[in-house]
Length: 292
Image (cartoon, rainbow, N blue to C red):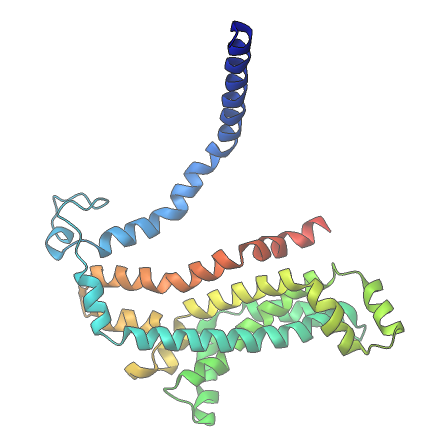
């Protein structure tokens, strides 16, 4: 190999490294935000894997495991009805999300497409309803739940969660449906489709990113909800994970920190998996209103 060829290869490698360095420099400002976002998960994981002796040792470093990994907190957590609580959370969150998104689709499409008196005011009222805190609503809702005979039942949560999920889903989907061109629906109706058929066959396939975004947010809100779950359920077999973990692992002034962090880690897995699988739809659903 001649000297000119070796020189050309060295220059090509330098250009490649410079290009990679510039690309890396563009992402360096994101590192502090990434650390800030992942630190709670890291701290929960480290705390859940420490032994009690290290966990309550004042001289130990709180961010490192120095005395070996201990799975005792996870074993203790699984000795409680944790799996039942997780099953209840999945059931309640899935049903509440499905009901709320279906109602929200119909309401959002009506407000975005149909013209009737006070349509804009009605849309604003839905948004204001979503802003009402749950701490003001659980008292009147408790009377409704008692009237239906659903006290101390997870089905009470399936009934009450849509009270804040439907306004949120409607408000979120209204903006997305407005970005879908009206002409595609008009062409479908000219070809013989009814309004409902145009919605199902034309609009919904185009609005999948927005619907997925509404599903993700609704599922997250219902999964993390605490006040209604604490108020309307009391027996251990009816509790959700958020309430079951806190009531079982906090006894007076005694906190089982290791098992609490283990429950928080395992309880966050479904949310993480949902966002990982639907991240592309989630991002496109959030940004569609800004770029269209």
